[in-house]
Length: 82
Image (cartoon, rainbow, N blue to C red; front, side, top):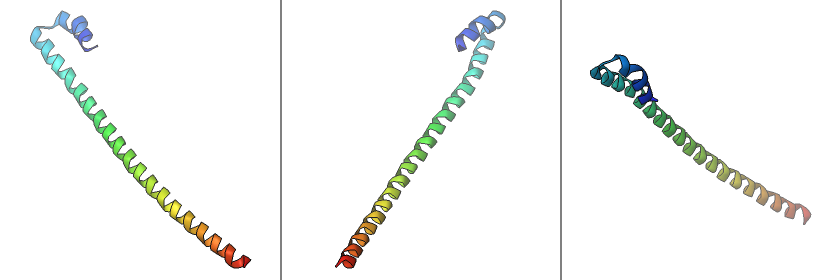
């Protein structure tokens, strides 16, 4: 797309120096967009990792609570039935 624009539109009416200048000006926003996208992906991956860690910790705590509740209910059942 970049080359098509330069060949079809710009090169017909511009000198070589102007074409090189326009080409360099077009690459700056492209590089900025790529860097911004990479940064957003890194932020998303970091948020995903922290969410997974929090979910795993929450599951671990839930298991302990359920284990404790089961032990208490079994002990109460034994005490009440004897």
